Each structure stands twice: as structure tokens, then as C-alpha cells.
Image 1 (cartoon, rainbow, N blue to C red):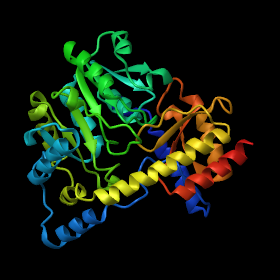
Image 2 (image 1 turned 90 degrees about the vertical axis):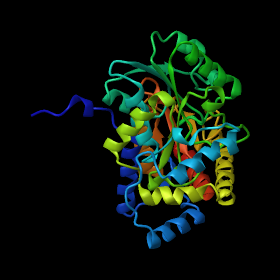
Image 3 (image 1 turned 180 degrees about the horizontal axis):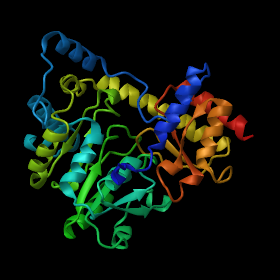
Image 4 (image 1 turned 120 degrees about the vertical axis):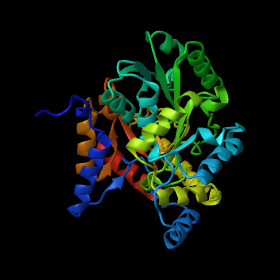
Length: 379
């Protein structure tokens, strides 16, 4: 017997960092968590109330593969409320987090051997899921001048493509595409018959720029979003897709066979999240304060080459002046100071040896203390 080559993908290194941090805590050590890309806040009170009520009154059985109709309708309304875009309820698919959405999207849209472009640095699971499915990853090495986002010029230089993945705000850089940039990418993809997949899971978490949905530029874009980040529901594992008509039946059949349905309790609770704006905006205000701490204090510590943090809750920093091995840098930082952060090699296999990602989703006092320890450690 032999293991499948499909399963031999690169690890998601941030999960390894989380394991090391957990081991330190289990041994009695303190950890300041700047590694994990999740809110430190619980789900909003309205979500918790809806879940409690459902546990008392609902059977919590399977739902339709595409999700509870009332939740799908509420998600469709969300696009009208936030973007002024009409989306048919039939095009909404509720998923087991955005992670399941990416699997469904890639399987429905691409054949093994197809070529799909994505920005580096970028979310590692795109690359790893595509590779497991036999789809060729076309890296687009981006620069600060591009705001670490794909450009039409880079796409044109990439050769034959079948798909493009964009993420705005991006993980790990936090950069966003404005209306013109999104329209340019969507128009180029449409003209060339290339499938556009837009990761919009950090929408709602921004600092001065309005998030632009790909649906504003192209109604046939495939959009993936989530209740994990802005809505503070990571462990509930519920997200959604807006699926083009030509892929809808494929996505439905794949969802039926792979997942049956997203978690029912999470779906019921998620519908209440849209009515919890006050709590959610308070979270974003705290992220904004944390962002200011890092953007002010990291340069004082000697890390002054930072990606523009337009949205999400990350600062992506160049550490080339201090190391050429970001994995070892993060390991020593955790061991010596208790500050956990993520090596850039997770996001950019070619150049990430000289970068790290700091998450500022935690408490403001943790950001302040982490910067103090980092400054002392770097000397």
C-alpha cells in the first residue's frame, strides 16, 4: 500500500504555530497570540440567543444541501444592503465555512491540469487545495507597488489561464482592491473567458476603504464569504458562496455528496448575525485601535517595511534585516518572549523566508505588550 500523492500537500504552517503556542501554554508559559487569524471575541449575543432557542425547540436535523432557505434569503438581502447588488436566492449556497466553499468552487469550476493564478503572498489553503485536486497553481509574485494584489499586466504575462483567485481584503497583507482595480480584473477575466473567484471573507473589516464585491463588477463572478471574521463565528464553521448559474447544479451535487449540509445549528444562529451590527462594529473599532498600535510601535522596534493594512486584522512585515529564516525567527520569538506570530513562508513560498504576519484580532493590551517584548528582543 502507498499513500495518495493528492494528500502530500504542504502544511498550513499557522496551525503548527498554534500547536507550539498551545504546548507552551500547557507547560505553564504565557502566550500573546498574534498568530491566529480569528477574532478573540465570542459570537454576538443575538447569535448565541438564536442558538439556545434552537437547541430548545429545533430537531437540528439535516438541511437542504444549499442551506436553510431563510438564511439564503437573508444572505441575498445582505448584498443589496451592503453593495446595492441584487443576487438571486437560488445562487446562494451555505457552506461548512469558507474552506468548504473553496473545495466546491475549485471542483465545480476546474479540471485537473487547469491553470489557476493567485497572488503571492496569499492564503496558503488556495494553493494546497488546488494542488490536491491536480490543478496547476500559477503564482503571481506581487509587490508593494501593486498593493500585493494581482494586476492585469501580471495576468497577461502568466500564460494560459483557466481561473484567477482574488482576495480583498487579503490574507496576509490586508490590502484591498478599489472599484477601478476590481473592475479591471473582472473585465479582463470576462473578456478572456477566465473564471474569476473572489474571496470576500474579511468584508466588513476595513479602515477607510469601502470593500468592493466582485459582483459589482461582474454578476457572474464566483464569490466566497464567511461568518467567521466580521461576524466573529470561526468555530461555528458556516460560510457561503454566490455561485454562477452554470455551476449551481454542480456545486449542489458536490455539496450533497461531500457534506450533506452545513451544520444546522450554525445556520440557524448565523441568520441572527446580520442584526448584531452594534456589537460587530465595536469589534472593528477595537481592531482599528490594535492596528494603530502595531503601525506605530513595529517601526520603533525596527520593523518599518509593512504592507498597507487596508482591511482584515493583519500586518505583514519584512524582517529581512533580522533573519533569512522566518520559521526559525517565529520559533525563537515564541520561545524567548511568548509572542506568537506566523512565518511568511506560509503565504509566499518563494520570498516568505524574510516576512512574518502579525494578527491584531486580540486585545489591545496584548498588542501593546507584544510590541514592547518584540522591541526588547530585537534590541
